Image (cartoon, rainbow, N blue to C red; front, top):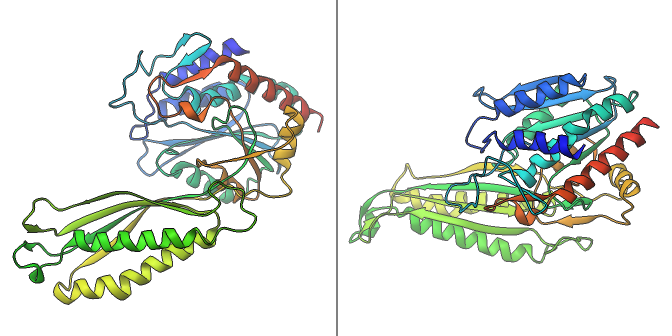
Length: 385
């Protein structure tokens, strides 16, 4: 089975599914392989028609069952110094190299390689495959897929998100909310600052307020939080604006994110910023320039995976792997979106997150083997009911 998985992974790596490009060829390839196993396959296109989610089912069309999920997109290779072609998989020293090998086409390849096993062994319980687009740019595809499943009243019971965790069972991670806040002021000469509205200055004041909220959040960590750090974090990633020393900047943009431990923290930050803009910044800007604006674009608001006491997916994987516990991770995944449907969810997949997004990304062969063993045991367990 490992050789089959390697061949499928090689095929998947050859599809350059960088987030800015189409993933349709890869989705068509996966659909064909799953249909050959007898799966019912649905493809959901985005508004452009250039990207799509795949949702396939082996077994009966009933509630319950398990979702095996992975994202099809990969991050760019631009300006990275690769030893070999990133879209041609190479095997060296017990490792498979290529963009997406660990994040996360390795898991996808393993699940598709095991599909015939599921088709033969599991007859009373649905086994679902969910392959999404644009995870790397805000989990957009998974959000659309979840809505489509709700509309069709499809209700799986469990989900495994196969992000690279070195096959550790992960039961929780923070959310990831990303924003771009844009300021429209009034251009003018630097010698007459009162006649213009300097967007960079107001953006700086906005950043200052963000940093105050960042400090406040360190005092708001739940007593039960197991995250590191235990509180919601805020990061200012970039501030763009202005051109030269003596021109009042008419435009500016702040790119920032927060990683909520709890939904109430996200609401606290957004409400505080809204009040600050409406009560202080905008009145001051519009006193000089009535058309001044502050607009915030939601780049993505990805729900966290909330650790819960009763998690059937965690229990199942602990039984299958012999692990005696589950961990938390700092990076985000699509898991919280599936949890929002009422599923019990864990993150568990082959490869190390330390290799993701880097030049010479790789997955170790022993990690793929461990993943295949887990999936084989999963099929046997599901077959027993």
